[in-house]
Amino acid sequence: MGFVDWLSWFDAADYEFARQVLQRGVAALFFVAFLSSLNQFPALLGERGLLPVPDHLAGFSRLRRPTLFRWRYSDGLLRGVCAAGLVVSALLVAGVPQLGPPWVPLIAFLALWLLYMSIVNVGQTFYGFGWEMLLLEAGFTVAFLGSDQTNPPRTILILIAWLVFRLEFGAGMIKIRGGREWRDLTALYYHHETQPMPGPLSRQAHLLPKPLHRVEVVGNHFAQLVVPFLLFAPQPAASVAAGIIIATQLWLVASGNFAWLNWIAIVLAFASVSDPVAHAVLPIIPLDWHAGTQETPLWWLAITLAAAALLLALSYQPLRNLFSKRQLMNASFNRWQLVNAYGAFGTVTKQRIEIVVSGTLDDEPDTTADWREYGFKGKPGDLRRIPRQWAPYHLRLDWLMWFLPLRTVHEEWFYAFLGKLLEADRATLRLLRHDPFDGGTPRWVRVRRYHYRFATRAEFRASGNRWVRTFLSEPIPPLSLRRPQGRQG
Image (tube, rainbow, N blue to C red; front, top):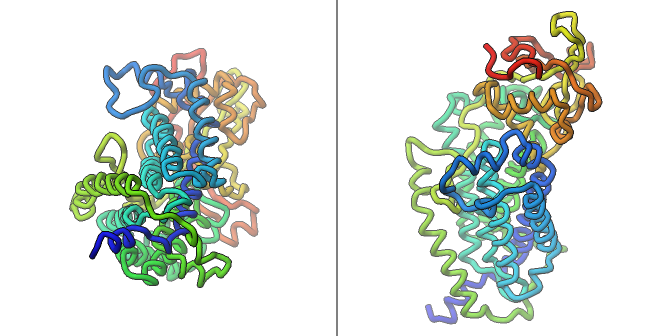
């Protein structure tokens, strides 16, 4: 193969639609991530937050992972970082940087990567989710897709497909190696009901006949353990594989709330969809994107090849992890969070245990007190309320509340949260859907554990309730600012 032929292979001229979806889609998810941080970070991790970043940074003589807040943190600086991220991501969604030379969108995406990494690396438990590093890796990789002046580089598209492979196949393998429910095909008997944050259709999905749930599990195994290999097959097989992944992820979007995890999988899967296939499905998609495009400059070829070589070199440990008996789930092998290991729901929770927080204005917190429950935006509480669709927006407090009964309610941040409720802290109350005291200060708060399950169709017709709950215990008895706060029981 001569140099001209090799350069022709490097230029994936028939993947322009894929590039448009990848660049604009990833940028849109960065926009959502920065918006989520702007709205929630100060209350959760700010100067007066539940886990203040200044206290966190003071505990390190040297912070291992890079962040712009290494030397100084303030809520104002955090808001500035979020505002910059929102502006840059909005410009990318609009396609403005893509109109210039290829180094312009490169700088824009690398800026998003560095800005958001600065937030994630001081986000502690509130940013300890796999989709944080997934967004970072996607942003870095998509940065090298170039601009409208050049053809999409095939090497980068292949590496994005490799990212989708690790995401899907890693999730499939963690399930096969995980709970027995994935192997005996019963996982979906429970998952729709016990997932962290159900959506509007989750109850209907849960009430489907059990044979259909078994079909769901078989379909999941096929989509995650077989289909990912076809992403690297010749067209149109690769596009068909991408279509299957997109379809299964859309079902997950419809049946639950997993922040931007499913949405980014959908966006990245388009790396394997060619223009001819996309045009055949939607004739409105053109086939002559690059009629007047210039040849790829050698300097840009060198940059993209260097990036591909870096990502390929970093792929050794994630590849080894995929086939390890001790497979890691959502793990990063380097401080820059590139080429990570992914996975989700290796085991499925069989029962839904909810932490319910309530307060009272009465002087004595006994059984005669008027206890009023706080309402959360996403997590179940009100028995009649239909769960909302929040994804791709991420409700971080609600997600952490789901983990409490799986670990322990005696978390530092949770006691800080209860203290903020006793103070009627406005920033904290804005994280909630319902404050039963309308900004007033309760005298006491308490924490109770309940078993929640979806109401059957007959139970719903009789009561109008979508949930049925049973009281289990009171792991944190009434607390007041008049008494020292600490671990109870």
